[in-house]
Image (cartoon, rainbow, N blue to C red; front, side, top):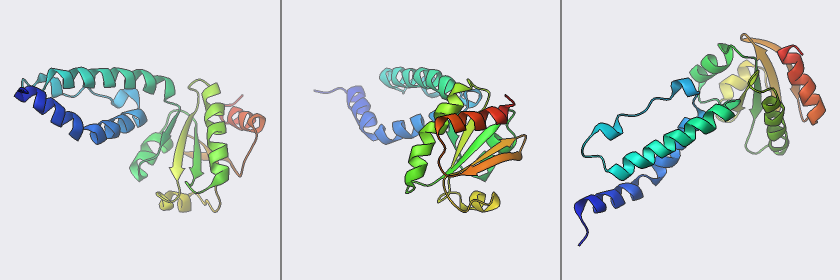
Length: 177
């Protein structure tokens, strides 16, 4: 006979797979300063295995987020304002689309160029199909379009694919090298 706590844990596990992925996705895109430990494990009714899973997830996400905090996907206009316009770091804004082949080539190259700068520049990814208003506001008429911003001002931009040397040079100019 299965105990009620085992049954509850199994049911909770099967019901939480999608929630787990959502939590990971949200934590992955949050700056470390915005992470807070939930009050899940203070309730006596919360299964111990759930607390252990949550703690493990949070510790893995914290370490991954801190080392990978160079790029993020823009969620909405407020997120763009907070994380791009008001950023203390220079930001490369990658306007792209899921259906765009050149965007799929440029994206990883941009991330690599930004990662080389070891936290001196950030990268915001803006899907033009989800954030048409931002694309219009910044005059994006073709993708991929990359805009370099510092202090909320547009410093430079380009449209199309660049090789790694050109991207390194572009990022270097943004941070003043």
